[in-house]
Length: 143
Length: 82
Image (spheres, rainbow over the protein chains, first blue to last red):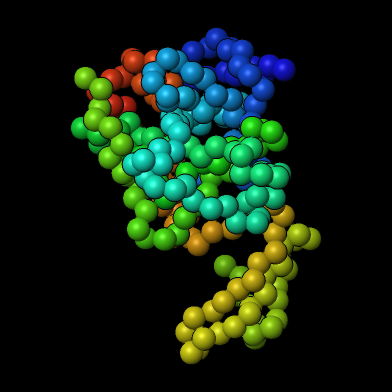
């Protein structure tokens, strides 16, 4: 099943795989609940583009256990929100920010994204603990 | 802003779906709440939520896909600073 996505970057409508539903939206974009993933051949980074709100588009990359340690644990409410039966059905991603720092692409470790392959649902987990970096230096800016 | 007085064990309801219970008042200073809300309603501490809200806005936008496509490799998307 395909979904159609209109990006703010172009007036063209792109065909993408079936959308993921974020029942709680994304902080700052409460009306953006359905997202599609667009891969542009840049390593393992993808664009998570809102179907509802063209200006809500994020760059995501998988959680790297070697660098970041074990991913967070989901609470019961988030598991319910994802309709999750097993942790094997899900993947953790981090939201990258290529705009905040002229030298570094940063990663928001305070609010990673959990996605369920099976229910095609997602949630952004907001972690209140102070030890998680809001702008972790993920990789140097491409030249 | 509406202001209500409630004691520990008492509750308020917002609409049909959201219930907030005052569970405990510690030392007359710190209040513990219990919150029942539908799954589509995100509940967070205000200061953390506002931090993530600002960061999400700074990280998102039409420039995200452009950057991924390689059109903005210097990472200086306009209007992206907090």
